[in-house]
Image (cartoon, rainbow, N blue to C red; front, side):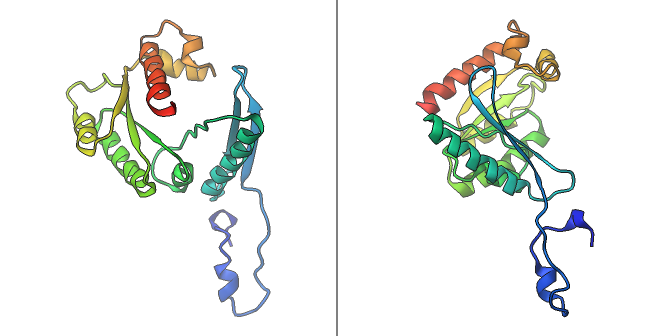
Length: 201
């Protein structure tokens, strides 16, 4: 058996004609970490071990840790940064959420991806909002706005492309700290204020 393809469902053990030949053992799927950032808020993060399939379970476990922490610290809001796509880790991220904030770029491929993700959001019956990232890289493309208007999805804001944003990520610093004069910063701050006023409050 290839351990990297095992999902831990134990169907093989149930159908094996020789009882007791196949048994399941507990294995580590990943690591969950808890920390307090230098900005004063708690952070729960996780890393899935190479080849392990239980990404959705790991996200669910992270959220359970975060829920306990919220009760301990009397916090009101949990922000879950989901993976892209519509896989099990995304489904685990959306489960139990009050609001989904979708982020897409103005390209046909990104539009297709966000439409698929939105179907998952609809399954959970959560209100959705849209942020358009790198909003100026494809000026002639209006597909995102047209789709959002058709679906009744409010657009929270548009972030222009600016090279220092990925550079700040490589520096392991938020762009507001690494490059406080960045052109994209104004849009990011405005979006944060809109989220605070229209969603969190």
